[in-house]
Length: 194
Image (cartoon, rainbow, N blue to C red; front, side, top):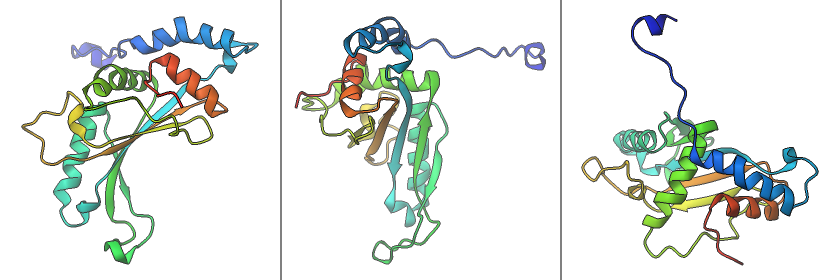
């Protein structure tokens, strides 16, 4: 109420186009195709985790700040800085050193990010032939690796300092990889045939 008095109104994020597509088209199709007795058995998105490792940040702390900035701009959410769990002398790494950043997306932000990934980012990749069908982990989760953050339209060339890759893990409630493959293809993920 206090925020409304100041002229600031809290609004919910706009409904995601991909979530509406899931509810209206994908869910009934999955129930029919995989012969579920109830729609609650059908796989759905649980979360999306984006991880950006910055090993060089042990020498230059500004690199980590730039990767945190890039992840914030790409996802619209503040990332968590990850630290080394154990010391590795060959990499000059001590326990507790800051080595990367990660973001866990859920809800509307997750659907907006996946929609952007499918419709904007993958078409911008050079020589893109589809995603590797072997990238499932055995429990219905799918991992994608990107070599550069410049494929996201939010990253401008003016603020860009160096190329950084990132790992994107799409976690689903599917029990098997085959269920997850059918679900993600219906959602629009460009997964190649085996």
